[in-house]
Length: 142
Image (cartoon, rainbow, N blue to C red; front, side, top):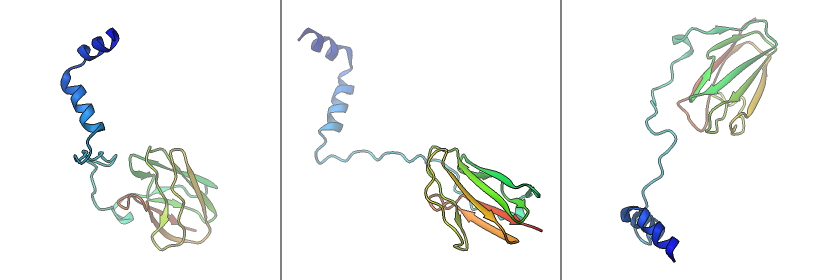
C-alpha cells in the first residue's frame, strides 16, 4: 500500500485525473490525433517546365529518393532503356503513380523501393497517390 501512496503523491492530481478522464471518457469526445502532415505546405506542384531538369543521360540505372514529401531529383532526363528506382526515405508510406495511368506502385513503406524501365521517349509525369501534392517527372530523350 505504501508504494501506491508514494506514487499518487509523486504525480500531480491533474495528470492522474486527466489520464483517467481519457481512459474512462465514455461519451466524452477524445481529442483528434494530429496527422503527420500537419502544418505542411500544400502548394500546387511546379510543372517540369518551371524547374531545371537533372540530366542523367547514358546511365543504365538512376535513383530517385522520396524524402520530406518530395521526389528528388525531379524532373530528371534519362536515355531510353534507363531503369529508374524510387526509394522511400520518409516515415510515411508513398506511391509512384503515372498521371496517365501507365503504372502504379504499391504503397512503399520506409526503405521500400519501386523500379521501372523507361524504353520509349517522352515525358512521364507521376505523383504520390497518398499525398497528391507530391509530383515528379521523368523525361526520356534519345
